[in-house]
Picture 1 (cartoon, rainbow, N blue to C red):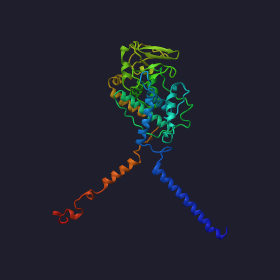
Picture 2: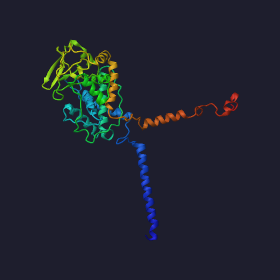
Picture 3: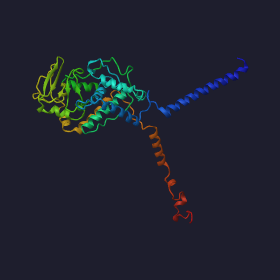
Picture 4: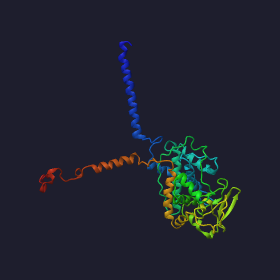
Length: 376
């Protein structure tokens, strides 16, 4: 290389390196100061969660049916998050063509449309799985308030969507609606690690909504108030005056119904929490009054007598369910403005008190009589 060009070559290398270092420094600053990325998405703050909660509440409110003033999305969002969390983890993916997921499509479409709406830009702010989890919490909370209590389940974020979200071809293992107590309790223990009391509390979610024959194959509401998450589910189950009996819906579906003129139903898996039924394969080998008690009958009775306790226990197990497959979910941040305010308050607390005082400071200030104060 000619000697004359060597200085220019060296200068060019220096300028390139300077440009690269400057770009890296700018990226580091932007990530830290502006986005603070956690994985693919920015930090979610309490303000973000409040805003998105209002969006979800709007979806639920607009789903109101004039005929009975109920809100199908309330129960639907709670059911959706359970179906999403079946399998390895809650991952924002549902196989809508798989039998147990029948009837979920309207709720997926409503949330997916909102998630990708440019007005909200939610797809740039959180995963679909996190959005579904928050929708489940918002819906369950509205239901618990209808029943006079407050759900205490917290929203934490950081769930990861499957690559094809919200669709998948995976066929996960779901609980058998026709099962007895041992099979029902065993499922939740095996796949979620739930205890008997936790499983009994979680199934109280069936106080919300109703079954649709064209979806699950079963038909009717569990309780009279389809929007209320409360202990009516357990009280009805224990109420012998409802004259519970089994009824065949079709060749593949059998359910428990009221023998009187009121409307209500239970699945075998529901009734198995109270009665030691032995379906063969769908119809119980004993009538309601003749069946013995199941291992969880005492828990059913406790919840039937204490709605406040039920909602507390439900809140706890619901928390575990919507965080299935994760051990490192993040708490909501307080946001940059609130964070700066906290720093400001901490600075004020660290500042010496005497700097804000009209009293003399320093060693001479403590001399008897304060003779070093300015004379009048």
